[in-house]
Image (tube, rainbow, N blue to C red; front, side):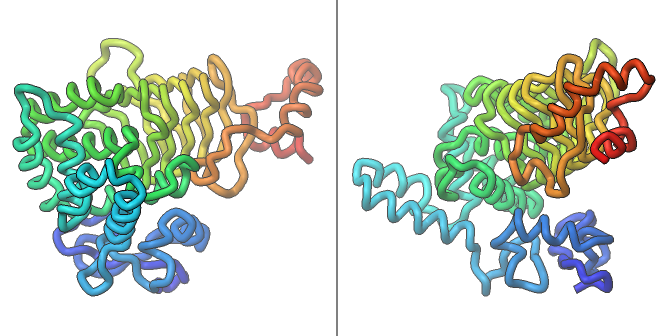
Length: 351
């Protein structure tokens, strides 16, 4: 435990220094300041955090791999219930010795085409995942995000085998590693194929955190210089795009714990703050403050979220009493020169 009482995380061998490891092998506080982050972690990552004084980037050999063990158990059970799927489940899960190899097999068989064979893709995917600790951690935390936040994902194996939001996200992660290795043509070829198969278009240079939920995924577009923090949830049809032909840093930056509703469009090098909620169908052209709710076309801040990050609660709606209050007082506020866009005025109005 850190001096502040927060959970600490050991640096994993070969894992670059970040918020979880300081790069010199010493353990650091995960959140750096408050116990609220620990509560969020315990809610979000129950398998790798709860019940232990230390959370490791990957399970060690003694503890096993709880996600992989769950996937195998689920696959065996499903094979018994649906014998017609037994060959599929054996080939996709039960014939492999780890989650990485199973995922490589599943993705390769989804993304193959006549000129890019599944056997070739399996070799590429295995090489990337088995040698990259960041991806090995992310595929597990993403699986927990899907199971924990998507009511239709009742088992870890469902994310691995059937959910294209999960497939497209992990395929992007592989393309991102290839891009950073200088294999940009191969990364772009994968991006093109991912877009064709999953209807999800994520540029391989974009930076996406872990514990991510792409719910449905269809129609999602994420541009080259976009940055998405940890624990973010994105619904179908979200666009993180530019505003024209400008070069350089031109795409949105999404803070951790944000929730982006279905069909939300966020354009330009702007920031959506930590824990913010963007309502479905909104067009966002300006910065959105942390823990705020933005609604409309163009989007305006209409209130502030509760303490829990909306990406974890998956609550897409503002409180009814707030909108009733706004509807009844907007005209008076406008005539008196007051605003609805800052937290100070919001809190005064509620008071």
